[in-house]
Length: 218
Ligand code: G3P
Image 1: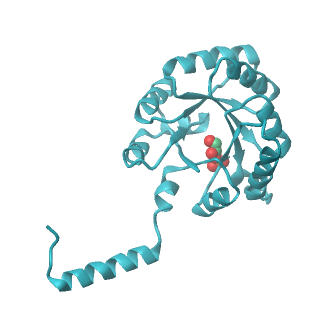
Image 2: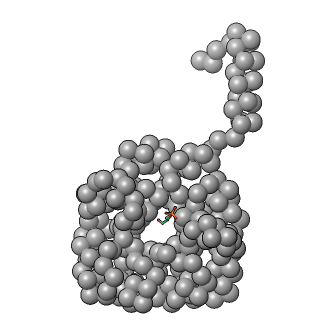
C-alpha cells in the first residue's frame, strides 16, 4: 500500500520524504488555506521533494476552466497529479486528461457508484473519504472494501483505491485490511504508525541491559 502525506506543509513533509516513508503527497484547497502558502509555489516545491505523485486540486467547477487550470498545474512538474472533484464536469475533465496521459485523482468519493464512474472515466486514483463517512455514522472502512470488491470484479477498471480522510492509525489499518492501493493521511499519523508502547518499553529494557554489559560496538 502506498502512503501519501495529506498536507501542504513543506516543513512537516520534508523529514518524511527524507526518511523514505512516503510515496507521494495529496493537497486540497483547505490544506493550502491552512498552510497560508502560495498554491503553485507549494506544489512546485513538493513535486521537487518527492519522486511520487503530488495531487493538486483544480478550483474551477466547470469543464472548460477546469481544463485551463489543469493545464497550468500540469506545467509545474511531470509528477503533478491533477485532482478533480467527483462531479459530472470533473469526470469529463478526468476522461480528457486521461487521454492526454495525465495522472488524475478524483476526489470526494463517498459511494461505490461514484467510484465506478471515476474508474470508467479513467482516473488514476479515486479518493474515498473514510473519516467524513465515519463522522456521520456510516462505515467508511466498509466503503473501501466494497470499492475494492467491485474493482476486483471488473479488471478493466484500473483505477487505484486511495483511502482518504484518514484520522487515526486505526483508519490506516482498516485501509490496508480493505486492500486499498494507497492511503493518504496527515503527517502525524505517518509517524504514529511507527509507535507502540511495547516497542518503547522493550527498547528501554534492551538499552539498560546493554549498559550493564559495559560493552561497546566498534
Ligand atoms: O485530501 C482529502 C482528505 O484526506 C481530507 O481529509 O480530514 O479533511 O476529511 P479530511
